[in-house]
Length: 320
Length: 301
Image 1 (cartoon, rainbow over the protein chains, first blue to last red):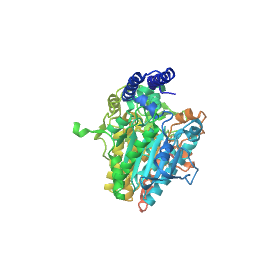
Image 2: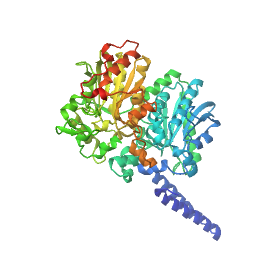
Image 3: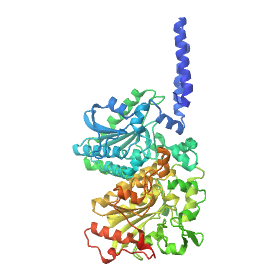
Image 4: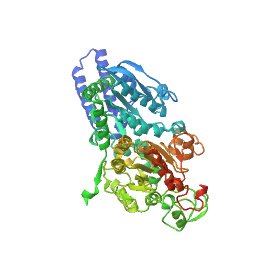
């Protein structure tokens, strides 16, 4: 099902398809007309996606068919060995972790996983981790440190799961601890926000040396719906909240929250998953190569300093 | 969610939150007794009848912990910027200005140096009455600076938390304060200096999911709401009633998430004793006193 703003594009695509089949049936030459329409289609796509509102980008970030963590893992990494379980409570399917090969080196992968259909979404809890998922991630951080392998995390979650068991098992405690453990890594760490970066549940695996984000992905302190429910007392005001929260890739680059924006194919990653995955692969390759020669303590220090600096405030003495 | 309640109110009805101003009497929210407000304030914001712990203004908190005359303020030179040009029903700078005037400080935190029974500490106290104690760039930066200065000055760090979570009006920058406050604690760990957090009502969201739960020791006040997701959010998600006492300090103690639940009259002695023990020193007589704050019924708390 197309997103609302995709409808004119889909209509035009349908028109071109019809014209093609009509030309074939009637054995007439409509090549010129078709070429004109195709040019118009390209222009429409470029225009539409250049002008997307922040709320529309939220919808692209959540679009069905958008490549998920496992899609990236399988297309970009070789020899993936999934590793399960937190050694305490169980195995959280909302986070997939393991070892893999990438660009001639072993990497430790931590990927938040949404479902690709309803059944998988239920299994994956819509990408919302319990404490067990963060414990599993921390186990991976330890493993990476012990063997000196870089960490790659793929962020895609509406947030950490707000449930009874999650709270009883210390959701806040594990997020805090995961932030700390990741910040202490003495190996390169690169995070890519591939879809939704939902608050603390995303940051828990986002304390990387380099934080990358796909062009139409979002990263926010709160979902637009929840923000709207609090500030406008109406979740239906989510589009306003999305505007106010400045949660798009470009916004976040301006705020220094992310280091690099990865372009998506025209029409969004869900329209051409293979192209999106190639772009992410190319960016990851560059980032990991650049970090490979850094010494362990410098990597930890640089990550510490990167996050220590974040924030905007006013020195009151200077103003007075 | 506490922060939600704060924002819902167009004009905060103070009697709900800060029990000190407005009116001479109040009805205890726990035991319904009529309390003379002066008695409440004199008793460190404990109900003189039932010992119920009211939320405490920052200055009163510091007075209840720091040795007399020992507190030296560090914070106050940083004010909030408006990095998102955030506007909901009101522009963020206007909202801040109003709250700054009400609370008499630039943001939701007060930090400084003090001694607790002569034990040198850095104190970080969050102000829940300032925008729900929400953590934006200033709160994060003040905590980070206090933690770093404590490490430089060979002080333990004590954080008294009270917060609705990360401040929405500074967007992802508020979220990043979770990581900032976390990394700023490293200097204390490297120098083997203790960091103790005291979670008070309410401590929620991004504050709980960062420095608040990273204490070497974590204490909480009786009945304090401590959570990642607020009860209302959970109820809306799972559409079930929540268990009795869910997300309260005593519940979390049972679940193994806290080192202890400490009634306010014992907090200072508990902190001083624990800090000294962690630093390999013998507690002094004052640390062993169970009663710190004069309160008629404090012993029964």
